[in-house]
Amino acid sequence: MVDKVKFTEYMQMLALAIINRELTKEELKAYYFVLSNRLTLEEIRDAVIILLNEWKYSYLPKPQQIIESLEKKENEVDLWVEKVWDILLTHAIITGKKKNLKPNNKIVEEALEIVGGWNTFVDYTQFSWSEEDLKRRAFMEKKFKTTLRNIYYKTKREKLLGEIAPALSQKTQEKLLPKMKKLLSNAVKRIAG
Image (cartoon, rainbow, N blue to C red; front, side):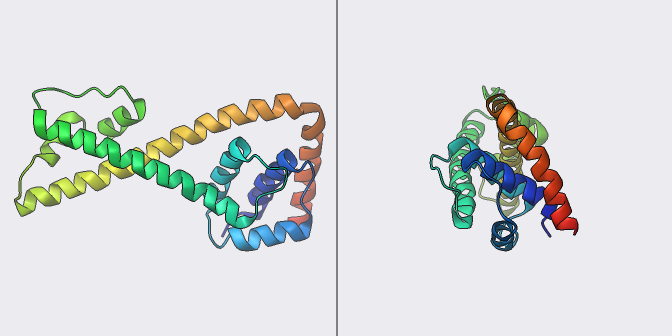
């Protein structure tokens, strides 16, 4: 179940930034009803961060638009993960352990390190049609792609939060921060009572 207090905090932050007012209790209930059945709290937070950066309209996005903001990003990331996998696999098959790969991308470098380093990656991905080698390659593919995707999202989330927090507090410090404090205390009272 999605935490109502955190959900309210994220949605009110989005509302204040986009439409410059608090959401009503009824509006919050409607958004909660739709989004809590489709997304986790972490996904809702990520969608809010994406929308704070990319939303270009003066109206609050509908629940489906919030969901779609995540799906668009996931498709882009999936394409990038596939491309990285193809490049590394090709390099591993062609050069093997002779040439140790040092990626110029910190996310890829960290993912390679987590799965055991370049030599382990090569061991699991050598070109062979034996059933055992195909299983080993499939295992490494799943492990590497999952690791890469997780590191990517973690890095992006940290970067976006780092960019948004100061921008919001500087731009709207006098106007929004008092409203946010009041809003959060009211939201806690409404949800608790």
